Structure formats: C-alpha cells, structure tokens
Length: 152
Image: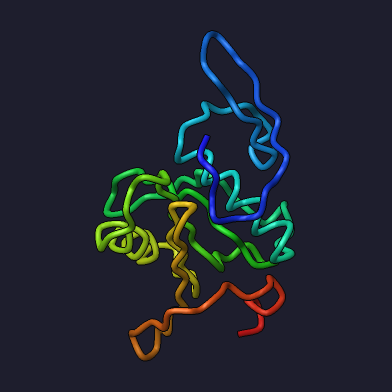
C-alpha cells in the first residue's frame, strides 16, 4: 500500500480467502484492505494516538439515514455524551479531494450536526469548524486535540 502523509502505525494484516485484509480495532474484525480502508485505518489511528481521541468514542462506517436513504460515514468521533463531534470522510490516496467529497461530508452533517468535519485521502487533509449559528465554516490548519475539540 502507498505511503501516506500520516504517521506510520503497526497494523495486523492477513490473507483470507484470497483477499488481503486488515484488522480494524474499532470494529474488532478483519476487513478487506482497499486503498480507502488503508487511509481510514491510518486516520483513525492518527485520531486515537496523536489527538488523544478515546478509541471507544470512534465509530467506523457508522450507519445513519439521510433523506430516508441509508448512508455510512467513514468515521465519526463522539463526545462523552454520544453526540457527533467530528465527521471524517476518507478517499483513496489517488482520489483527488474535490467539491464532491466536501459536499458528501456536508450532506452527512445535515443529519449528524457535528461541529467539525475532515476530508482526507491520506496525502492531503482538510479540516473545518462549523458555525451553525452563523451558517458558515472555517478551515483549520490542524485538527485540535480531543479535549480541545470538546471545549471549542
């Protein structure tokens, strides 16, 4: 798999029924190792190990409904009350991050109402803070630590 613009982490991988898999510690199961999954697993570890997000407050491939249709967010970080705090949209490294990726994340957030959004392809990362009252957003240079996310 490609080298990403994220710290290096140790992952358990295995060959299962002719398919390469990676262990997802959040879902506690092996999942098919695709380029997007490679990015997702790295970014989740980045959240947990670098930004001090409690692993138990991360949901991966979290299901919800948008306009009556089932949807899945790549990752959602929750606050300690269980409310969404950050929505993460992951793309494969060779997929450019364009307006469609932001629109997808923003559509999900119409339902989830998280104050932070991130879109990443493992090479480039965009994060923004949402101001629901002013109905605008501000791009961030970096995502804050978990405790700072909760207090802002």
